[in-house]
Amino acid sequence: MQYEVPDAIKRITKEELIDLTAKARSLHLGAGRRPDWLMEHLPDSARGFLRAVLRERTPQLSYRCLILVRMPDKEVEHFSLDLLAEDFDQLPDVDGKTLLRLTRWALSYVPINPLPPET
Image (cartoon, rainbow, N blue to C red; front, side, top):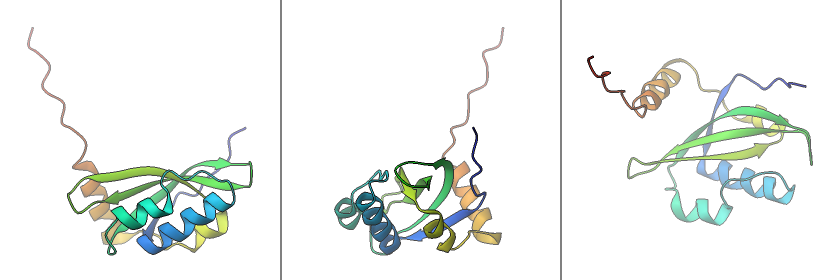
């Protein structure tokens, strides 16, 4: 049975990410990074983006989300985090110019395929 997930792309701050990761761990939900790792490795000004990719039913109804955070060294942290629906809904949506910038930035990480060899 396929479950619907929200279409929205959400913003998340470092503080929100740490709090929601701790909450996920306390509820035995999935968390791709530990709160202490996030505190140590993410700059205080870090902003991330997330989208729901799967609706989980156990141990509690939640959304499996993919988190994307650009690091100061221009590397990208990409990991999953399970969020309760109400926590997902409370995060601000990404739209307008920010969504366009996010799309351009994300597309810049897609490698260009070489031309096929001539035969």
